[in-house]
Length: 120
Image (cartoon, rainbow, N blue to C red; front, side, top):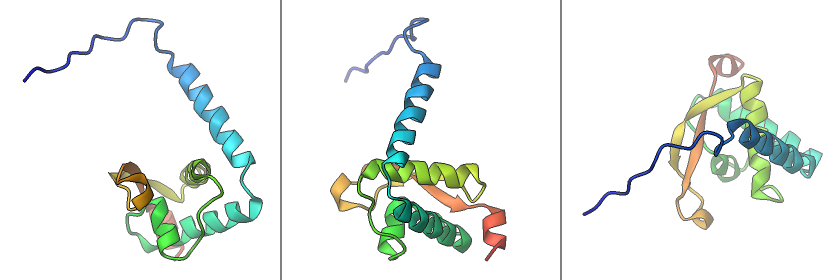
């Protein structure tokens, strides 16, 4: 069995700042296209799961009946990002998605911060 070898990136070929700008622009566009009512419901669902102190992923919010699926799957990211920046949740790792529609791909998992759990 042979192993694939990857060369070191060539200086200037990868621009992390450009990647971050593209991510920020894309997430802002997704959030701007998200209905305000769904944003509020999703934010409340994230806070509820954070209070429980258990590791969770986006699909758990739907499974628990706390929020419906968004109009587009890209609309989850900005809500979780906002909750993380607000100190409600922190990244807990990655796990296989529980959604059947994504064929168990990896997704980020989250847990409520000590502050969020204390709010319970």
